[in-house]
Length: 244
Ligand code: NAP
Image (cartoon, rainbow, N blue to C red; front, side):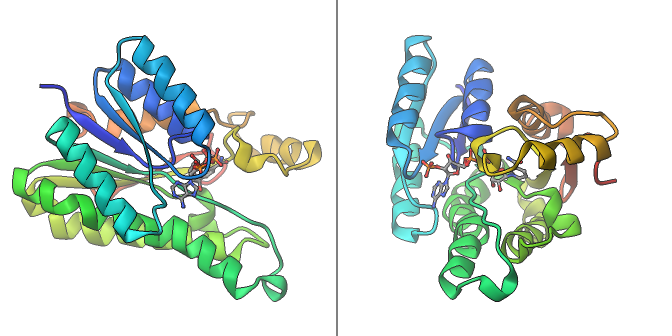
């Protein structure tokens, strides 16, 4: 029987690429989305037309009830969730003195509480089946901090701590928990960056380029493959050497 992956934030960017790559590997894919209905449905349709087993499901990862319903639907449709990829995220740039409580709550709510909600919803099933793989998408900014991104950096640092703690807790249940910390990846999340911003990052990056969604998806495929069974609690930088 095919394994099932639940990917949050799969309507675009890194999550959409992972949906394609996991579908191509033969997984059943549950593509979560929240606002981008059209792009999620278009991607789902094109993958289904190619013969892949995919459902798109709308749920706000901040909303526990919606997350629980999504997990229930995934289990009903596919009978199992073998891999959870906590990828949904939002960012914003602001001086801390201008950061509203609402902005703080939004960033922490999606990037960190969303990871908690989805993980807690899926874990009883994984613990019961005594196997599972969880990948959390953090950021290099969670490791080194980004100026004018206090909330985002704090949330992503929280995801790293969450990963390490959970790996210790659920390892005895046969579940691995790992984290990917991407560097600058070409997605709409970075559409506000100027050419100068990007050039400066490329100049500081040993590999001399920014990352692609494929770079991150490849790391996720490795960390969920049979080749990585003894790897848990690890933080894998996919940043071209910018943060070492
Ligand atoms: P993106 O293109 O903006 O995509 C973000 C995804 O998250 C979208 O599918 C969006 O879905 C989803 N999302 C946002 N809020 C959500 C919510 N409340 N509930 C469910 N889904 C939600 O960004 P990306 O670059 O692919 O980012 C993916 C992950 O990588 C994020 O966690 C981000 O922090 C991390 N990351 C990105 C970079 C980078 O340079 N791009 C670097 C480091 C880390 P809807 O549009 O449907 O709402």
